[in-house]
Structures are given as C-alpha cells and as structure tokens.
Image (tube, rainbow, N blue to C red; front, side):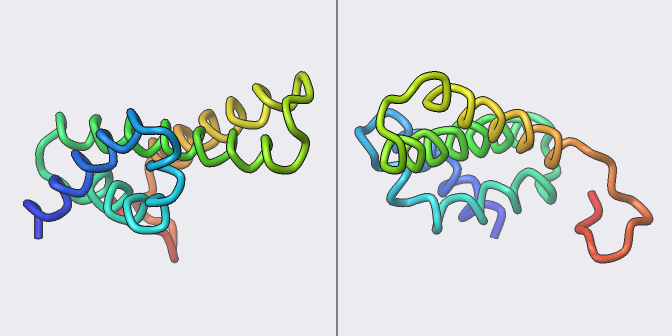
Length: 104
C-alpha cells in the first residue's frame, strides 16, 4: 500500500505542472496524499505529501474562485492563500487523544 500511496503522490505532483490536471484528479489524488501525510513512516514522504496536498488544494480553490467570480481582485489570490494556510494547519496539528480524528 505504501508504494501505491507514494506513486499517487508523485503523479499528483506531476499533475500540478499541467493545465488543470491537478484540479480534475484532485478527488482521487487528495485522499492518497493525505493518507500518506498521516501514515507514511518516512518524514521526507510525509513532507512531500504535505506540499503536494497544499498546492493541490490551493489550485482547486483558485479554479473554483475563477469559475465563480472570474479574476476579481483580491478574491482570486486570497481564497487560494487561505485554503493553503488552512490545509497546512489541518495537516500539521497533533491529533493524539482527539476522538474522531486520525492520529499520527
């Protein structure tokens, strides 16, 4: 399973280089990236998964903002930035002892 998770994280990273590929594949790649972030034994892969997840969430937020309001300033850059910061916060908190949340 670890190899599959890592492969999907690499594919998700490559999709970030494409025009919209990460947005379209996000429903498939984000769960694998988050699972890798929480459960991989190697700190390097956890960091890579965090980076890929944050960038994918920011790109999805940008695309949604673009569809909803066009290039209206400042929403076009505030929404993705807030989404990225919240994702970093959610994926880096310590969750040991909190019921209902995946523990590291």
